[in-house]
Amino acid sequence: MRHDRPSGSTAAEVLARVQSTDADGTTASACVDALYVHVPFCMHRCHYCDFFTLAGKDDARSAYVDALLAEASATIKAMHFAASPTVFIGGGTPTYLEPADLDRLLGGLAEALPVAPGEWTVEANPETVTAQVAAVLAGHPVSRVSLGMQSAQPHLLKALERQHDPAAVPRAVDHIRSAGIDDVSLDLIFGIPGQQVPDVHADLAAALAMDPVHLSVYGLIYEPGTPLRRRRDRGKVTPVDEDAEVDMFTSVQQLLAGAGFEHYEISNWAKPGHRCRHNEIYWTNGNWWPLGPSAAGHVSGTRWRTIPRLKAWMDQRTDGLPPVVDLESLDADAVMGEVLMLGLRRLGGVPNDTIAAACSTPKRGKHRATAISTHTAAGLLHDVDGHLALTRSGLLLADHVISDLL
Ligand code: SF4
Image (tube, rainbow, N blue to C red; front, side, top):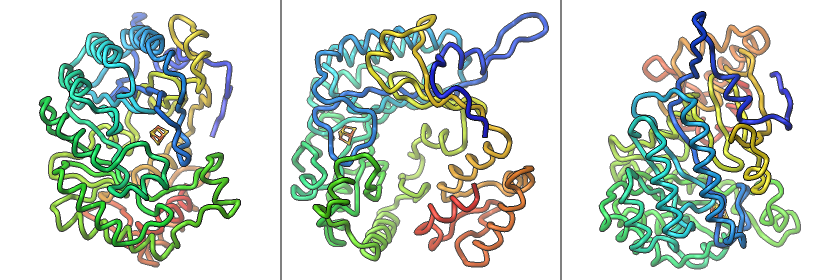
């Protein structure tokens, strides 16, 4: 992997890298399938969170929207978009923007885009979704709202330091649907300290009662550098034991299969026709452009992240574009590693011809072929319709299997 210039680069430089110039001097950028917009503001910083989020910076929200729209206009006009690209506005808490600022952000993006998005998702936290906010979302081409439910039980929400009470979730869903957006996705977490398997059943029952078309169910991760991790390391928090976590994950699989959901990625389930197209672009190594501080992007093997500091992102622009960090162009071996790492998260797996290419790269190819044989013999990988995929047991050991193939 070539890792060049971890800092000091700009998004203008990235644009130049992903553009090509024809013999007649015409410049064309690689085709972008998706746009990711990072809104970093939150009401409160939850102690398990390792995203770039800002609590207590409410005064900066309006200036952030000005800067985001300036970045969008400088970027989007230089870019070639696929038909029906996806837009995902995540964070942070996008719906923590003032309604007028949220309206400006959505309207400005819709106006800047040269093609109509095929899917437009906004992440939201339940306590921030009022009837007014839902009306703002529905006034633009927003097609999905992804709501951070996490649990339906007060003591588990408290253990996560979430700010909402359980009743806020159905209230937010009502506002979203009354405003005219039908597709609601709910995020849940399992493995919360103090949680037991029946709690997971109760959380899923509460989620299903709201008739979501999509569910993301994640195991709690004690991310390095977070207050929760430090509390665990000091013995102040007792993690759920591994066997119970396996039981929780298995329960989620069984209950959601019974409710008509397709398990299509390790942590994601959808009703037929309602997979998250945007995330599918990530998992199939598509091209997406990032906007906003600390937003990660990928175009044709080049990866980078917009600078994760609000002031530097706003003030240090070149040709209207912000500084970036972690800029790297991957070699063939590293590209194949990424394809496997992301693709094997999908239950449909990775096509066999891609696997053959991954096993023929100069550095890691041979090692991968051996690792695939070993994990297949152990029942952790199998062939599904011409694709290599994790088995049911393999899903429980996904990190171990995938890291062996990188
Ligand atoms: S609301 Fe979400 S993004 Fe904000 S701090 Fe909590 S977990 Fe992180």
